[in-house]
Length: 181
Length: 181
DNA sequence: AAATTTACGTCAGCCATATTGACATATTTT
DNA sequence: AAAATATGTCAATATGGCTGACGTAAATTT
Image (tube, rainbow over all chains, first blue to last red; front, side, top):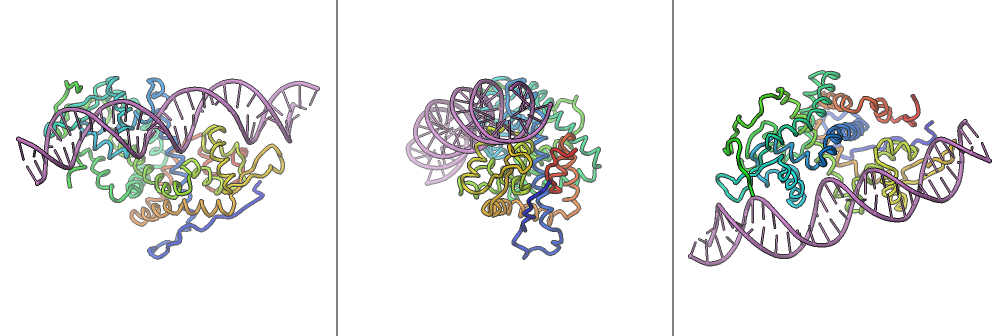
């Protein structure tokens, strides 16, 4: 079927800092594509539930991080999501208006708006996470816990170095990781 | 504007806001977030190059898969990307007009348009992939090849079961995996 | 105390990428 | 000859980003 074949181009032109580089670059193409397909399927899991309530993926992301980090302020959320306050504003307003998220003045800095999930918000976050958890659980069952651990370490190493500590703190459930150096 | 009426406003973690009915699947939350952050950083790597040439991520995706699977037809590409032909049309037209991709009639079915990267397209695909490869290479160096293998297996297990064979074929570089059951 | 900076909100417009639906054209299959 | 298929295109719409400008309240600096 393959009538034309260009072969695989060589990838990295920087073998200087490669002490144990024995793998061909083709292996890295695999990772590009695996990440693409895995993410594509994973991220679409909650779409059915979202469209049911008239929300999109942006709402899901905001609700997820508010639920996981109750009491974070708007600036922290912007920093996590890497979007502008205008973009956040639109979805956050809807989440607040429809009772999924509530705001409170910062106790030490009254300019801040700390964000909390309501009971309704927590329930929805859980409902949205469920199909993603199911996907992860099935993958762990298929590959074993060791590969999940390897994936965790590898994915963490993929995060921008400058933000890895922040992400690690967020995974631990720390508060205020943005402002604690 | 802020309606405040639940839980404790303390900035420190307060366990009283957590519903106790959910299962302790906290380990799966890690994966949700790691996948989000790793993908977010990985996918933004080529943005600088893309904006230089007036393209977006959609162009990158198309060029990537055409380059990796020279001679695939439009239907195959639509199946990989899971977008509509109208969406593909816009970016594909630009890629063709600007000389990154060429089309050819299918040899057995002249209705088909087989897609090939031009020399220019291959060069650009390589240039766009380079920062992503660098990120992967750094991650492998940091975690070891074993974790990268674990990540590969885990990510593959995350792909929709119905398409896993197709993806595996695509990774191997097969042609026409869509129509070879 | 006044000036400046910060945190947040909002209006307005624009861009990239996706969607649905309708329709056209060439080619293959029935 | 008719039907199905592969592709392309026009038009309208949705989502989720962006920049720029401006306003307000509270904290910080001078």
